[in-house]
Length: 84
Image (cartoon, rainbow, N blue to C red):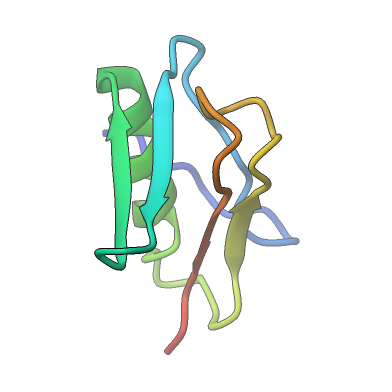
């Protein structure tokens, strides 16, 4: 997997062109669902791995609004952040 370098501002959003991703939240079961094609799951994994790079600092994050256009529905957005 091609993990992207961080730029001086932190991680950059970089989804594969064929991405089809669904993010949902089931309030009754308190479950977040992530479903996608290979391009979407590969892109999501790359985003997560980018935040694990040694030069990443706590607080680096990536955030997508529900209406960002990367998700197949606008039910919920997605926010991932390095916390340590």
